[in-house]
Image 1 (cartoon, rainbow, N blue to C red):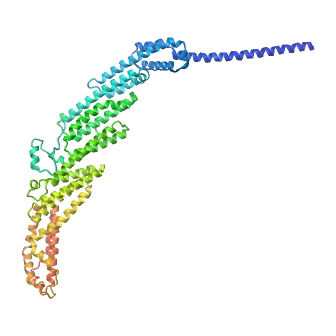
Image 2 (image 1 turned 90 degrees about the horizontal axis):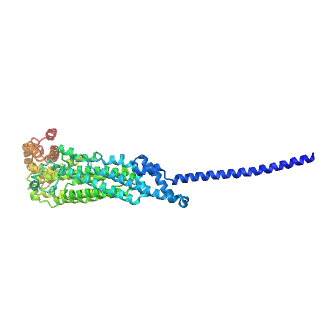
Image 3 (image 1 turned 120 degrees about the vertical axis):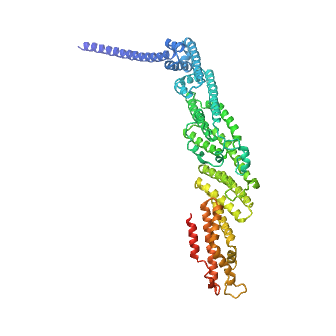
Length: 590
């Protein structure tokens, strides 16, 4: 029994040993299988990455450039990159067989893509082609071919890049040149070198006899409806043939806005396309070197002959608005160009402004003077010009312009005083100044409430000259009365003095006033009506004169009351209520 058990134990030990061996073999086989699977997957991936399927060859060699071609091109790109960077591929024997075929395919693909893109670029050159639609609906679909050329055909990419730049440069330059030529036919001339504030109207008419009758003339100095261009800043660009068909003509700032609106929209579209298609912003500047040169040439021809200060200021504001528009679009491609335009407009505006200033400072007073105390055309020009620039400067807030307007105000003040001195009588001189200050205030108020210091200056000048005119007007009719009141009325008649006021001294004054006062007031009324263009201003002056007259007469009456026996003159004295009634009567006329 013991022997049997020993034998059985030995057999079990043997079986255990066999099981252990089988376990080891199984683990070994499992490891080998796993390694083979890993090797197989790597080999399969390697074979897949390195092999060139016949279908791929057919598509690249004979297929059309379409979506399938683009997908195949991406696969080819991956295979070419694989053999270039994979260390296993570099040491593989298969490389010797595959690499020449891949190189041939790469060359064929590059050649085919180049021909395809160049063909599409030629389509851009055809007349009446909508470039933006062609770019968006055709070229952008094939933007991968540009990425392929960048990686696998750098020299050909540079050719494509150069071809696109050359094509778009010429096409856009031609478009802008044609557009500018069409716009030039629509231009309405506003001002010439003789259209200056201080130039006499007679000499201007000699130069402007051939030009259109200037309902445009007022546009030289008055802003009028021209300010509406700032509200239309985002409107589409003018279509020249439609405008020409309706015989419409426009001030230059309208054409300027239209040209730059077209430039902004074209530049925005091209900048975004270049960034998307080529992945290069710098291409934009190479393309637009041509259009920029065309526009620069146009502006360089226009600006030196532009004497329209209002138009130039409008162009400065339009440029500023365009800069804000491009900033809102977050498109920086026109920043330097618009800065350059702005830099060229300001000096021209300053030069034309200085011409106006010089025309006032160097004005020929004898040629300008007219024997008429009504507002002078130079003052109306000045007021309209100043009001226009103040109105335009509200948003812009240029401090330098405010200083220049103050210089202009001082120059027109000096000229007005010189013109006033040409009148023989002080009353005429003062009346002339009042009329001109009044028209300046009226024009500045009409333009808005932004007259500021300039308006205040004219209001103060009007006030001081009104007081002087009132005095001159009264002296003309009541000089003896005024002289007495100013020199004698304040003396005390009861004081013992050789110069005491007597009844004999005042009686002629009282009787003269009683006889003439109503007629004198009527003459003053007629004088004021004919002297002042602004009826309300004239009535204010008449009312001030009558009020002052009442004060003088009241002082005379008070003086008479203090004279011993002065009551004998009561029968000849005009009652204060009668004078007040007459004042109210004239007050009712306005």
